[in-house]
Amino acid sequence: MFSKSAATTSLQSMAIHGANEKWNVHADAWKGRETIGIPVCKKKYAPFDIKVRSVVDGQVKVTVERMYGCVCHSNLRKKVIEENGERNGWEPFGQWSMSKARRSVRREICRIVSPSDDSSSSSSGSDDSSDSELEDYYGSNWKAVCHDGQCAWKMKGKFDNVRDEIREGDNEASMYLDEAALKNGAGINGALLRGALPGGGG
Image 1: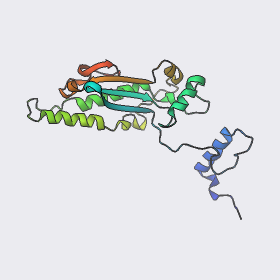
Image 2: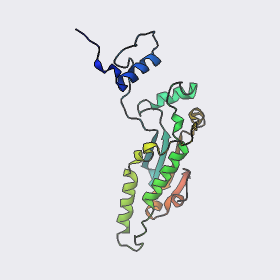
Image 3: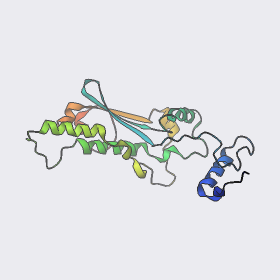
Image 4: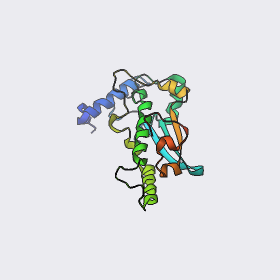
């Protein structure tokens, strides 16, 4: 004999029921169900995708891109937002600041490529040290740059306009750095070839 789950009063169950009632397109079809009536993506979401890659001619490309879902679904939702704006009821993607993300990336790059204060410029192992710094540069945990709300707007009601951002091409920013200049300690400003990520000095 089937009996209704005893967990219907838990916070998770109430959230499921609330989602079913809110997004139900057929009257009462999902009401009271103990699972969400539509397929739900289980992949993790991060507000920004940050990539640091080696490209042709000894260049390093740094890209910051706003995400609108997981890596599998972001572009689909991006097209919907570009045409119709954000759907009523969605958590606003603009609550995470693109400018803050770009500045955070720049600060992290500066931290990695800047020579340590206690390092000797005449060290015989300077080449090995530079290679080690660049290895950290590529392998850095970029997902942690905007972790725990570090790139979120702190002002109540302050959001980026993501629809305008997409239409104007500002949802992604890239810069190209000269790898040899980075190895020689030139910093971001000295190594910058083209493109820009706003922030402090290199």
